Length: 433
Image (cartoon, rainbow, N blue to C red; front, side, top):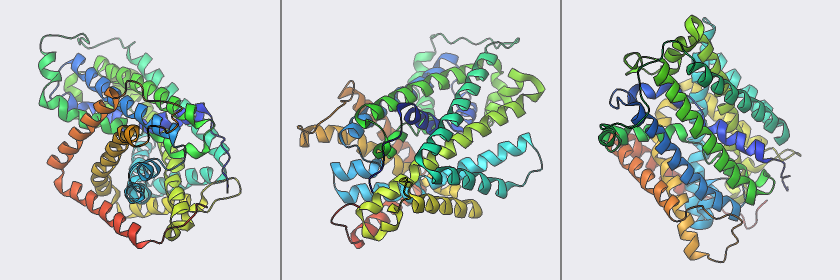
């Protein structure tokens, strides 16, 4: 069945924005400010993270324009290296790569909602939000796109409102965002490098629109532009929001705290600030869950088109919605929520997902040599410097993950090896559905 290309640039960009902005930007500053006591250095942390994400997005844009099929890393790595390599990436994404973050976002939604409305039941709220959003995306791509656009616009407007209100507080903190003598040592120090790993997690999702490339209008132009606009826009919001947190709230109150968004909210909006910020984060989390519910099943769908064993995941409605893949992801999320195992899974998949992104960006360089005649409607800006910047930071991240989370890292590699066994045990289809 041929899928109609109905996704516009606005919707693809909204998908990128929604997939990046989660709870990370509202929670990580407290651990950074403990070891980096400088407004300039803290903002540089988020600027460097944004530049790294942007470098990755520029590289992915070239691949999506040259190889415009849904599936993200599964499709890219299959075409660049070998179908087995792509399957391993797709296996990780289709099983837990999206399900675990959805579960994490759903439980965070429930936590913040109960902060606004105390006494509400926990698990039923998490399950309800997951399945309500799944039903929206089961209808058709157009309805899911409209839903995503509305939620993302609301998220951006509310964050912008917080930024404006934050810079208007009466009792601002004596902090400078201009560079000083200590900043050179701070920016090139170990705490900055370690914090960058967690900042990059907050930027994850910058590749979102590549997963639905087969449903996007004029993918050669739309995908690269959506990645650029979405990542650049989020970088501006992230830097401004962290500046507001630092400007409005005493550093001693933020230091070592997880819920920096709620703490800053009280200083920005007064006694009701915690509830206001909690409601804002809830809206943002709905948008994030929606984006991952949309793009995650497209990986399984594309894999089902190529492998007979997973053919059931490729089944679609008349309007092109991968109904079985959406239901499958919803079921996996429900199991994870019921067992609370998503937190451990979310930790060990980080190494695997970073490795897949590393291989994908490296693939831009590989393809330039192996397929120089390949039609490239868009070429990576700043090549080869921009891909090399991303590769350097991604490699550093993997080293740090292995260093501090060795058990989880090897568990992630074990999941990938299991996917490799499944690939070679599965009969291949001669032609795509």
